[in-house]
Image (cartoon, rainbow, N blue to C red; front, top):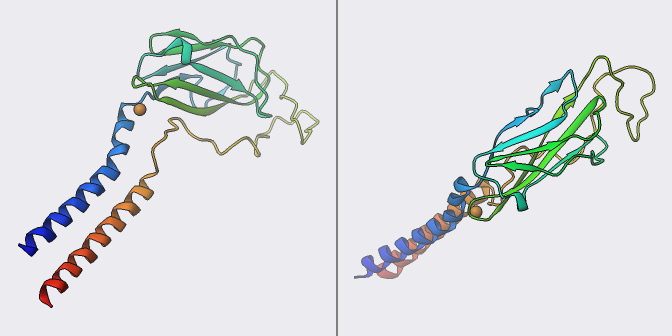
Length: 192
Ligand SMILES: [Cu+2]
């Protein structure tokens, strides 16, 4: 009888651990970026006039944001996103100078949860001048790679809201340890 209740207790703890893990699963159903033009980390010899992002799921035009900014984190003038099924496109209003640009997006998943991310591409037109750097004014025509101190840690595509796997793993370890201790306690009580 005692053994059975201890086993039931352990089973309950394991069920709790499973519940802890469960919220990570629906992330698979979220919208994700499938393809982009310009592509991530592309180095273009001609400035693009549009940015097109293709996602896994249909986009809602009302909740689709695509923003282009330069290496100084200044917003580049673009048109509003034009949505066609799972694809969103913005037109770039002004010719882009040489430099590194960030495309940031925010869309919603089929379940209504927002998904956001960003990526960079570089314009390196040999015939064009470099974009004037905001702080470290690099005068002279040296078109070397100037973007060393750029924006926030490049959160690669697919920013998600779930807790990191390490935390989940740590949670499972704790739960299993507690379960083991509890089982030991039950056995000691039974023995005494
Ligand atoms: Cu969701």
